[in-house]
Image (cartoon, rainbow, N blue to C red; front, top):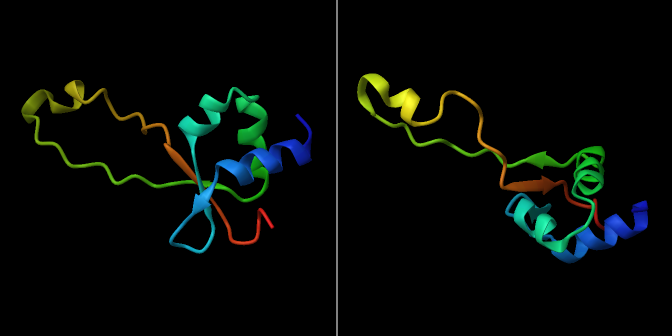
Length: 87
């Protein structure tokens, strides 16, 4: 995909974010069937940041970390683009 096609795709799928920028859902990019890697590279190249997700603290006892799947960070569900990126 070329730069203009990716910009058009992201602009169509993105929604306003409280920060003043735009937010795009990872699932929307995947559902679109576009080249996911190219779109993600474009988002990162244009200062897009994964939304930070606060994990709920679990008190699973002695083996709680094993039940939660270890310490691997969760996959970001949304990416935030700064204001003016899609203009």
